[in-house]
Image (cartoon, rainbow, N blue to C red; front, side):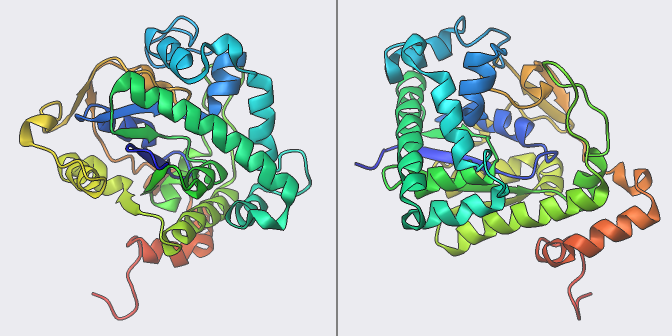
Length: 319
């Protein structure tokens, strides 16, 4: 039985403004933003990190009710087993990198063991999404996990209505953001990457999401730079694509220079999920001065096919 709600899977490389975009979508009627659902098991249930409201999942009224609806209570969920299942889907315990997981999700008959793990993890996700839909009453569930294997797994389920929200940002902006040293919510710092490594990662991840679109998965492409400059128009377009057209008053939280946000219940994601009140929308293009000429050239060279495809570079014979 196919569900009557839509799972809007935010698909991106990271460093692309997806947490803020997800929260803005969560302000729309009929939408609920729940953050990086795949990290519920480890970061929330095991590590005890707070959701967007500032409470732990065990203390949050929203997630407490979701746990009861979906599983009869979080104490009935084996979070370590769920984390292990997710890790096996990502091939974390093998010499193979993440991209090799994607053909197995698209063609599970290649490995009966992988197909069994995929089905078991998918069953967990379906129960979780069902609980979120019942508690929130929303028709569109915004899952900002972003990880390609997670998005593939959701879209491979015939009993879910998966829709990909493919968010892209200029690869040079992503590369510069990945050079910065940023403290995590818990211990340690976010992983830093060289510009060239960021560019290669940007290329394969975005190509992976294009593959889903070519296979017929409903997809909406959003450029980060366009979104922060024209948020009303982009939100209207996204909502229309998932069958939830908006009225003008639905966008009243958007001002000329920013947005006003309240309390949300996003799992994982960056610190923007805790912010409340007015937030300025600004296209972060510090990479133009932050990257050296050699770094910009290297990132452009690695990622130019999709930079051109997404409109960041002129096409041959264009203006």
